[in-house]
Length: 135
Image (cartoon, rainbow, N blue to C red; front, side, top):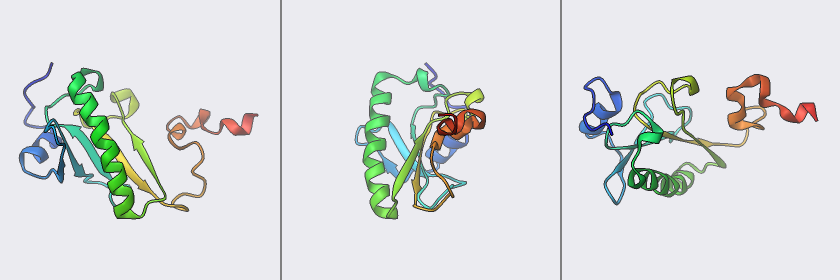
């Protein structure tokens, strides 16, 4: 279990700097606005403890992360008048994780924000995304 955050972790710096907008009731998880938002209200949810690997979270951290994320999804949807949400985790470098601190993205979505939203997360592997075209 990772216990000490490397000083270079941007999320640990933001947490220790007081940038967390929300703190979970159990205190294990925080949420903050994404520094490079995909849409207004794009929020990151992460454990307070530095942990690079999603599978390295304790049971308590994992449960709190997901339950808190659901609460935030409801709040973000109401606050942003979103029509939908994209909720995603890039778990590992090969999956596109660029900050080595577990984090979940909540991205408010609005009808018409992209020409065709079908497939959603499937587009991370474009050659396999439009499965409906092969039917």
